[in-house]
Image: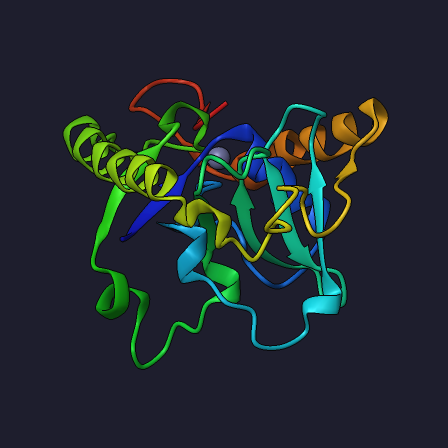
Length: 204
Ligand SMILES: [Zn+2]
C-alpha cells in the first residue's frame, strides 16, 4: 500500500520552514508537500539512523521526522504507533529512474487545498477512495499485530525511537509566520490590470 498525495496544510508548510533548506524545494510553488502515504512496516532504514530525529509543532501534533545532518525531511507519523501510518516526504525519496509516478502511480490525494498559495483543484472523490484504502490497510495492520513492525518506534514500548522536540510557542509562531510571509513576498509581484481599472494583485 503506497499512495501519492500532496498536502497544502499550514502545519506541513511550517515544517518545511522549520527545516530551512534554501534552494531545495520541499514545498511546491503553491506551498504543497508531496508525500507517499504508506505503512511503516514497508519502511526500513539501511543507513544513517543515528541522524534521524523528530520534532512536533505542538504536544499533540504529528511526529515529523527528519535527518539532523542535512535537514532532509523524512516523513510524518501519528504519535501513537498503534496507528501504523507514515507519510514519506518526497525530498528523501529517489525521484529518477524510476520516478515517483512509476513507483507509486499518480497523485491520488490533494489535501487542505484551502491553505494553498493559489488555486488548487480539489479532488474529493479520489481523496475519499484513497483515504478509505489507507484506513483499510491501517486497520488490517493493527488487527494483525504487524503494527509493531515500525522503524520509527520501539517495538515493545511503542515509544518513538527519538525523543520528539516539541516547538515552544514562540518557535511555532516563528515557523508559522515564516510560511505566511513567504506567501506575500512570493505572490505580491504578480499583478494584473483589468481593462480601464486599477492594478490588481493576485492571491492577496
Ligand atoms: Zn499537511
